[in-house]
Length: 122
Length: 241
Image (tube, rainbow over the protein chains, first blue to last red):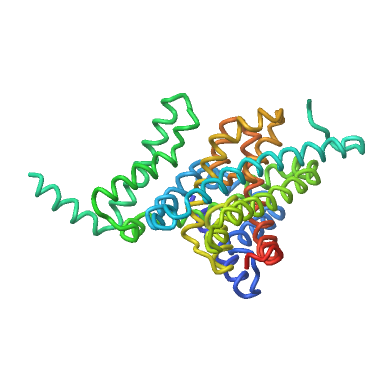
């Protein structure tokens, strides 16, 4: 558990350092994820060691968004001024994104199904 | 007696402990209600926790800054959590490899749709550029989305709220919308929910099935990479920055 946590933190740190050093537009944790993925591909043992801790953190993923959500307090002024635009933008965009993503995947699965790739199951 | 209690509250409120504990307890209470209601999507645990906490902070006259001194310990874990996404990614790599082309296409279309449709609606309704910048990365998980907005010169803390709202909305209506569109494949459902509603959607997708959850987490992880690379040039292209 402690080792796994240390590994996650060190990789995040390495990601932050790399992002800053190379002036990349990709945030540190994402580079940390890429580094971890590379490390897992090399060492199967590492994957087994990290699995439990990773699952424990990811299982309660939505808890981690609560402090950011409470930040709604800070933006009462902007939200009350532009709430119609914000609510509509979030609602319309969320629905469109879900639908377009799913339909694109399904369309491509059908397009490529004939070429030996897996098609949709039904 | 009441005065004495107020004293105790004021005393405790100076430590991070109080707000850290409140955050976790409010979330657990939200999760309990959610489970108790037979997982009614409207009783989303994050939504309940945020509502309860905003209520408590408003009534007790606590600033967000003071609250965050405690809550930052929870918020901080978002970074390691993003790193940890490599683990389910690794375990689902075989299926990912098989479906990589359709999934990549879906991810690309999803990331572009999320940013452009939000910015487009905001522009149509005369919202400010700052609001548009905060809206653009709202389908990306919080720490990364905040990083994207920050790098573009927008208000990162507003982004955080929009990210959470998008997450909750996608978790609440996403499954029904997908069913309405006739999408039944668990991998496709999970991937679409994760692309749109990141971690909060992933928590919801895991309840549909293991497979939906894994693919939702996968989409969330990949979307962080795609959106970080794609959004800055895309927003420059449409003239937002």
